[in-house]
Each structure stands twice: as C-alpha cells, then as structure tokens.
Amino acid sequence: MADRPQISCDAVKCTGCRICMLACSWVNTKTHNPRNSFIRVDVNEKNFACRILLDTEKCRRCLSCVSFCPSGALQAVEAENMQEGGRSNGCTA
Ligand code: SF4
Ligand code: SF4
Image 1: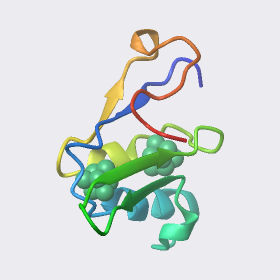
Image 2 (image 1 turned 60 degrees about the vertical axis):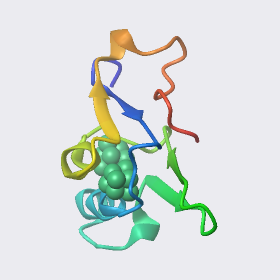
Image 3 (image 1 turned 90 degrees about the vertical axis):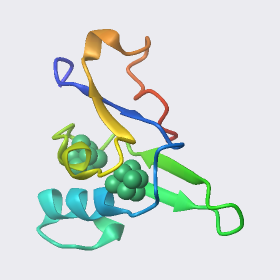
C-alpha cells in the first residue's frame, strides 16, 4: 500500500460529527457501528476540541472517510509528500 495516498488530519477543522467512523465501519464490516471503525474521533466535552486517531496498522487507505468528511478535516495526501516514517500527518494513533 506504499503507493496509496495517506490521510492527513486537521483536528482544528473537525466538527466531531463522526461520519468518518460510520463510513469506515461500513466499508470494512458493512455495519454502521463506530466501534468497527479504524478511525476514531474523540471530542472533549469541556472545550469541544476534537482529537482524530487513525489506526495506521488496520487502515486500508480506501479514503472513504476522507470522501465523507464534510469539513475538510481529512485530506488525502500523496505518499511521497508525507513525513518520513509514513505516519499520517496530524493524526494521533
Ligand atoms: S474528521 Fe470529518 S467526518 Fe470525522 S468527525 Fe471530524 S468533521 Fe466529522
Ligand atoms: S481510509 Fe482507513 S480509516 Fe478511512 S475509511 Fe478507509 S480504512 Fe477506514
């Protein structure tokens, strides 16, 4: 999968809608269960800050989460433009 785009995350743009989690669950398990998602969004209940966590071991980089993200918080980035180590930019995991 080295040639597939990576996922860049910008938690500042994230609204916490968690549509990405439903999209990932659906493409991978044909369920709408956020627990089955390889991407997780945590929302701080006090200040509403979002944290995006991508399971880079399980993610197939199908980019469904990117397609459904309504805010632009998730973006596809060509692999050669990612930082060394292949970790998806800005995603905590
Ligand atoms: S990353 Fe996008 S789809 Fe996922 S919770 Fe944030 S705004 Fe919603
Ligand atoms: S790119 Fe990864 S996290 Fe996003 S929907 Fe596909 S498998 Fe899930």
